[in-house]
Length: 69
Image (cartoon, rainbow, N blue to C red; front, side, top):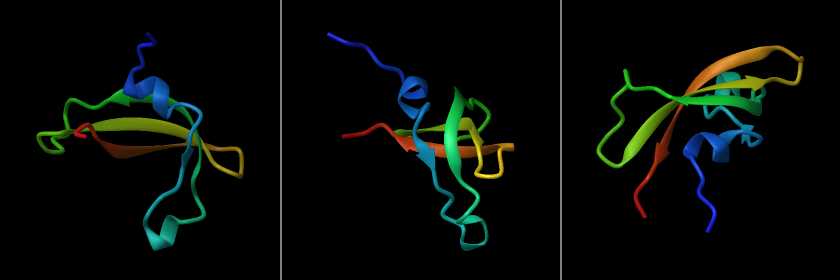
């Protein structure tokens, strides 16, 4: 049986911002860590992610991951 963490599942995925102003500013997630300073609900967790955008710059964002089935 394999054990995964949310962080390991986020790394390598493509981040696509939902904001119309930033819709072309996403990229591939290279780092993820849980944010304990952001409350996101009972069955969700917030993660700080670093991603490389198409221009080659690293940027940061916060995403919320739902953990419920």
